[in-house]
Image (tube, rainbow, N blue to C red):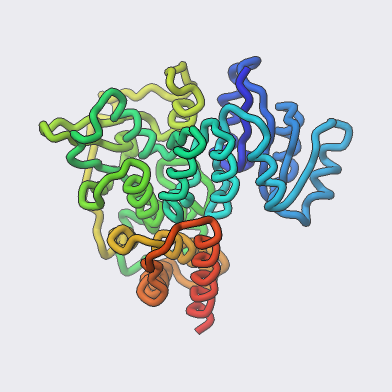
Length: 384
């Protein structure tokens, strides 16, 4: 029986992971689960899975969690130190699905245990890609990508020589506003931005899809994880969301990964790797789909993509700056402090004013310093 932990268990990735685990009783032993504010869900899942430890990221909710777990024998804990502890408990496979840069420290801790880290937290590679990869190599750990696009690339490269890669194409649905007039975008609401046309995801990643900041992060993530040159990475708008990525080789061939817009495919691939197991996902009817459309993204509609190119060209800690600025811009949009289009304007200004490209080793502490500086700068721009 394989021991698994899920960091970020109450979000969409965590819930889909638990769905797959409960479909194969007796194959997995859940060690630790973590969540945020949804204490009822966290406690219910911990009880069902008979976890050893349940952690809420919010120390103020510890008493609520303890009450919800009373009599179960499951230990409750809260806060950053507890998340680190959850990542240290012996496990063969750990899902990293905590949203944002908050997932970096637990992910690094998990890698130091030498097992397999299923990485759904793209921010870790954006803010600290070299540190993540070096930590995995130093401790004999393995990182398996769980983003649908990076899982698709990973699968397309099985048995292939990476030196033969000519280009990689990452697809994007275009988000909630792909067909809205540009003049309307300044006034769109949080509720409108929270509705994805194809995927069932959490609010933050859904809004990031509408702005394509999510895709910008994925471009940087592909650059870091697969060691791809920036000019080898392309983005195409693909409204059907069935082709998740394509890998082009030096002989002109394109290897495409095609599947339904269901995160359980990428999660299941990582959970069962190196084997393929039956998964409860829809089987595509290509004749019914009929047409697969692709288009170049409009830079005016999706300025985040150009910002990703700027980050890759700058290097250093610019990924940490970009991610922190993006996270804080999203916070302010959700809170109603700024409009939708203002997010990219403020992130661009912060990249120009903060930079982050200075030489120096990327460490957890250095990422934290740049992250803090950037968030302060973003807040000052919003107030101004």
